[in-house]
Image (tube, protein in one colour):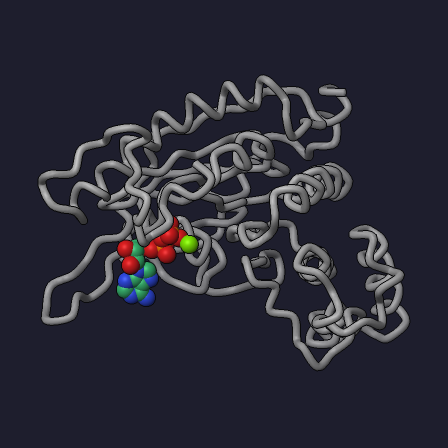
Length: 293
Ligand SMILES: Nc1ncnc2c1ncn2[C@@H]1O[C@H](COP(=O)(O)OP(=O)(O)O)[C@@H](O)[C@H]1O
Ligand SMILES: [Mg+2]
């Protein structure tokens, strides 16, 4: 099985390079806040890379920089060796909320990027059908988004993200709002689709188990300021089962690394009397940074 999956990958050439990138924002009342400090990251073609870290460590910022929706304060992002100046059809982002157009059918939602790109109707129809079948939603092609469950909406969003055949798919906590069972099913589906399509996937999550379940690599990010703390290769066999023992034990290692970062943030937020007793996470932590960790 492992070999089959390796064969499906397109090779080891770097497709995304994040080189000495920093990102700062002007602070109200003067000065600036640094959200990313000198991030270096090389992602190979066909790789499935998970960015994992507590809220506020800059995961979404990194996706936005690769997508060309934001620009680095210093350093540069390159895709296939060319500096990223803005968004492009080779990169799409899928978000936690599917953001489907509520007035359009599933089919029309998925067709939308093709219409924008001026793809002729016959080819558009064929590509929409292929992608709706890929996510097992063909039967629901004429449904409206409000008729779908959360998991089905994310399936539709995935079909829409892939329909233009981008080489890079970025996913920002795409399954965070789903229940655990639906999430497990979608992990398996995403793994299959990744193997079938050979896309490079950059997947953001604060859920360690999800990162280890899915990634060829798990990039553990630290915070204050955001940076890459560790870059772990995950060479576990695929397809991975949700309750795989190796996934669980590697997740425990990653969780220990992240706990230090989370405690650091909580310590800054709470008063001096707080200590990391028990699991170290106060129950009322309003930021939800321990969710799923
Ligand atoms: N447009 C913005 N203006 C000011 N600060 C921002 C902006 N976007 C993000 N930040 C700050 O940058 C840091 C990283 O944010 P983000 O990338 O959204 O983190 P994550 O996705 O890991 O939760 C946070 O401290 C956030 O407040
Ligand atoms: Mg985010």
